[in-house]
Image (cartoon, rainbow, N blue to C red; front, side, top):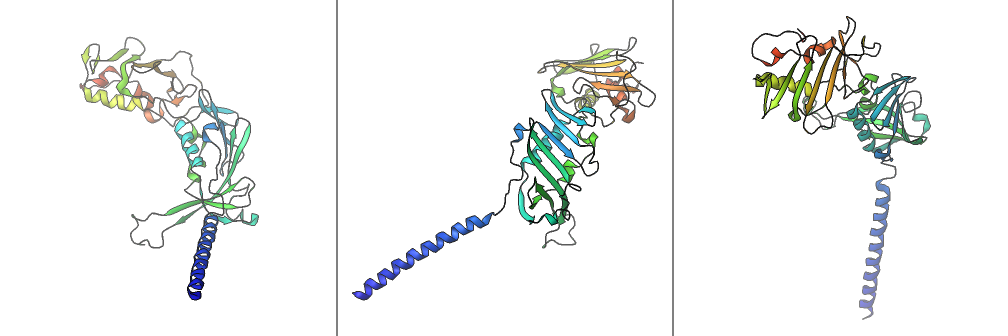
Length: 333
């Protein structure tokens, strides 16, 4: 009887001891699972009002993106431009998704090696109104091929690209997935709004081409069919033009010239359903280098070269462009 009680007590003791050991191990495992910060950007991107980027290529002229009522604006030196909305959203998404996978160093002496010091890093400062809410230093990147990858199977290899990151005055250097320099180290023009039109051509019902002399005309949609002066147009030619114009853009910015006249020589007015106001594209006479300066009501204040990349000829077409006549004449003739 005494033996049974002893065995029972020992069994209970071992059960309690086992439970205690398991509990301690679980707590230690939980603590040791992440001994460093994983979220490197902790601000709410919806509250961000300014992003200041000091790139490696041009540290003395930071790129400043500011949120305005009319949209995001780009500032470089004394110049102001309309910022590319898609680019700003890409930046905000990259910041929001910035996670550390591991710690690369905990010593300040390693900053220069990983290029996260103030003299070599891409420095990003994020503000909410006038308050600085985050400062990030993006350093060099690492490129690794998986150990088990077939060295002869080049096309199916999926390399792992990571970037070294430092947060504010923290001594730690973190590793984050992704080639962040590709997003933040860009030229000024890469941040600018290149759009001439961003619209759905299915909503359009009338395009009015206003040209010199008597060469003006209108492209009108009635009951799903397009016509010019009551004459049905070639549906393929009309579709080709409308597809281009609906997403027309250009990288050929003109900042050093102004129009020779306040009144445009050519204009295109687009009207339709589901729109608050029409879209107007204007062409102003310029020098022989640009031919015309192109401006859109959807990107006001920005001028594009009409001659470089043939932008003028692609927008301001003649009425013959929509008929299968084989005859193509320049706009206004």
